[in-house]
Length: 124
Image: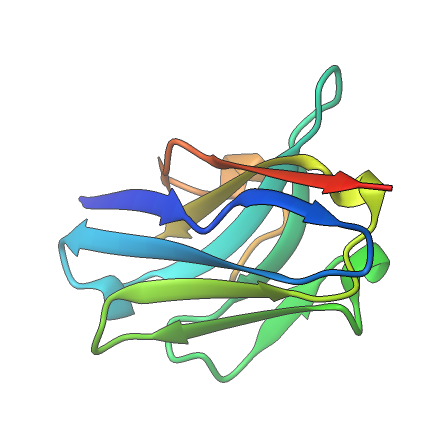
């Protein structure tokens, strides 16, 4: 089992940047593929980006490509999401998640463990 704690959220103006962190504890972090999801008020939780256990392959939703970058440091047991050129529509609670499967899925049901979320608010 792995425990996940997100941080780094906050209030930022459109066009600004934030870096989210997801600190893991418990079983070996490097055994898990990891993902970032977000959920805006009144909307379903949606996939943002994912990374395989070794960090060699990443995936992201089209709406964030070229603006968001997912990465990980297995030695530090930390997952990152660098968010640049933020837009008001990026406003949501951002969650990190872990899966013991080889592939980094794009559906919430593909993941076994979740953090509590961190709020990102982008003002126009």
